[in-house]
Image 1: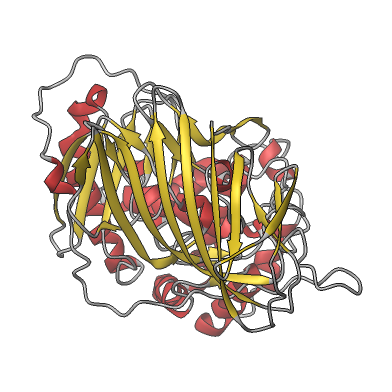
Image 2: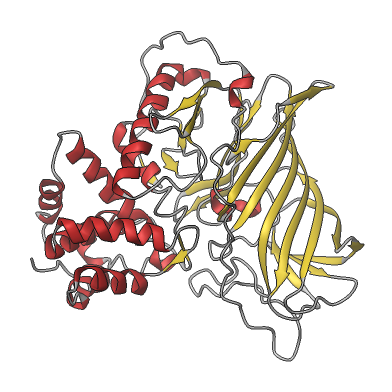
Length: 481
């Protein structure tokens, strides 16, 4: 995610909207479907076979749930912008990581009609954002099961968050802008809403005719219109954390094609931002291909970007389709969000305290893109930030331990990026860029932690780096050079 100043577009160049058929991209790359990494099991309740109400992240104790590992979400959703009414039928395929007589899902609001487990009606209760499910028969440890939830209502996004302001399922004049970091997936579908549990996603999204529903991955069939409504079917077959899932919808103008290296590329913009459509498509392709030379092969089956008419003031790295909320993204922001496809999306953090592994890497990618384009070097950008006086708040916030009430602090981004440049300076370019590729490849589609990165950096460089990481990530105060 990258905070951004809103940009007022003065005038627009006419651009004919692409036919909706341009959305249809085959899952054509032929790579094997990866397996999601199971989260660390949370403890059961004392003496009972109940999955824990949280996945075990001490900073967000009620996010996610214990006792099971999700492998796939199948989301059948309908949304009417006129009434802001959402209907959902969600099937969650999972495996029990312990014996379960009861387990929880995360869901904010909505009227739940029925819940079934393994095809049999289950009882359920609600408490806050927890949906507690009791199957008709206990679930055996290690056994697969499917839970299906039918529900409806008006989505309620998270508002006035100390972290981000407004996020989740956000109604717009013509549809919805759906960006869910850190824990907004629960505002539109029941889930194990924490990055420690990754899964594949299938979407069947029905909206009024004339609107476009965008989701992660690729369309698997041509959109079908009947009775004044159109259904879009998408699939993201690579593991994905819940906060990256989207069903952003509304009126969009589209441009579809491939990058120079052959990656399917889809850009979509609200008509208000039609003047940025061609640039978004072109720059997204260029940056996707360039990062594949720096970070290793692109990890997903398509790339792209979406600009919607909602004044979010930030962007989010939704897997395969970064979202830009109410502004024309410049190259730096696009470079940031696309770098996340490697660092943050393919490689996901297991605990929020390690957020610098996402944001520090993506911010440093901005510096690398500037170098590549003949702009300011990473060294000069580092020097500019290092010139901030010792009393600057950035030096008082150690980025290696992100704070739950201030996750997106400048230090997590900037000082996180500075950590990487200090590392690059210490080990040299050859070892540093070898490390970036090896880090992305070794943990592809999995989870990562800071200690794992430190260990790989030392192994790759042959140097002892504890003091460097301790000074830049974990100590208050301005590190000495």
